[in-house]
Length: 369
Image (cartoon, rainbow, N blue to C red):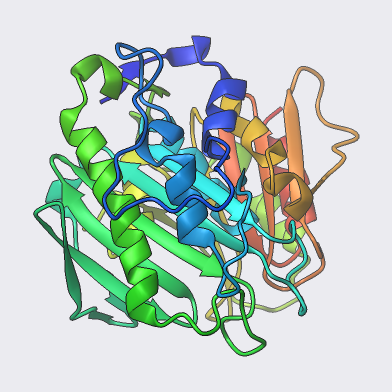
């Protein structure tokens, strides 16, 4: 899966794919379990998100306990945006839809909920069951002849399975699950997992029947060099940006995402994308971690897609070195100890999380000159 697109890739097209592409649901219409999505208008072209999961199935999966019709919109929760970019870049599917209040209305009362369906190509051999802390979920559900791992809890409802040569994950998350009440109050976990099974069954059937042309998706060229925290990630600039106290013990560590077997789906996506981490540790504690995704810079537009566009603010980069093309966004609030920022510098994409992320972003841009 995945025809090489190189630098002719359309970042806008990939960003649009990241935010999902569900068709408009029919109000009040409830699909039967396992209903297949409508075939693509171009049977020979690449599959899209609404080929995998029909608008009717999306609406049924996200309908609240009140039974009122819902109108899902393509949107990606900001917390999922970076992994979604990596997934799209390696030729996978990162499909996401929302109902209810738009981001970033995280505080009660809020009624937002997301349905995601992700597919990582050529990763079935790395598949592991969903993890509950440090242990695998013991629960399974048969979906289209596949024994899928399932789990439910305060984070939402999840289903994961190897499908042919790929690794697929479906999830429903919502506001209020941890205590304030969600749109799904009164619907038991088994019924919510039934909804995910319906989504997965339709998508699995479409993937299984697809032609090679339909599974060809644009990809970026992946890093072929060793992971190294040098150049834009040089230690001195990152340390200066962190504004550390005098006398602290500093470590600067590099970790290649592909160096060990993945512990979960997100880790498998990072390994497939050939990312690596540069972690600044002070007196044994992490201050900031930069995840580098070489060659993914052209996909920066994904952070301007719904709902990522309201989860992040544009970060001005005044004073960037001459000839350096860079753009950045920062998650509100930027001063939070666990803040997140993303910066594209030329062909590279960097995900920065921790303390003083704005200063670290500017150091990365400066050291790219």
